[in-house]
Amino acid sequence: MANRASPLEILEQAEKLLGREDMAAGLNVSEEVVRSWFKGTGTLSNSHLLRLADLLAKYAADNK
Image (cartoon, rainbow, N blue to C red; front, side, top):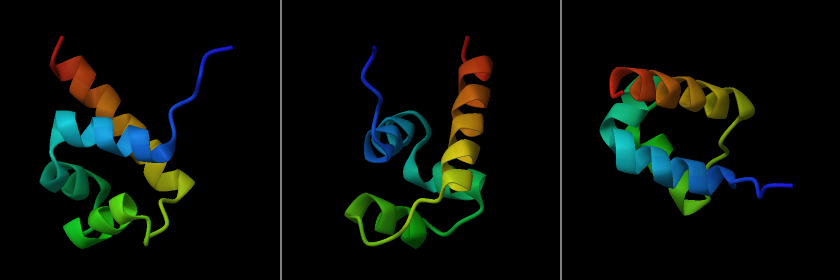
């Protein structure tokens, strides 16, 4: 069975691809909220994680 990425690892990879500002805009949250997820002081909901997956899928489709 393959190892699963943690939510923090997913955030870090998304930030590398999208940038924190575009990530926040795409998730319709402030950059401060995204910053809190990275620091571990905010709660990254499953719905935000799924929306982030959608953003990454769109990024992949646009950058084939």
